[in-house]
Image 1 (tube, rainbow, N blue to C red):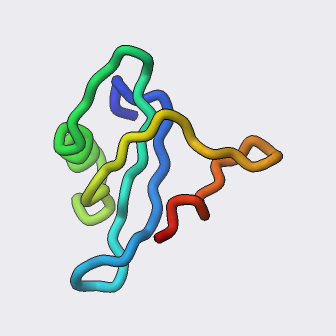
Image 2 (cartoon, rainbow, N blue to C red):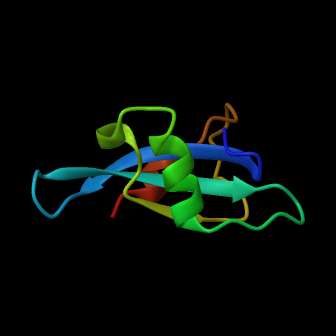
Length: 77
């Protein structure tokens, strides 16, 4: 995981060519800063390029279910 991130998730979103694209959502550690392209490059160096997120959104905290799981439905558009 990228050093400045506290938590991260990936979701599938509508893509321009193949129907779906990978999108990252990240919560940064307190006082940390990051640019989406830094994180995307970090991922491409460690996993196959097609598995890396095409974009990243930064949020304050993830919405949780009653079981403390990330409620990913909140990110579907």
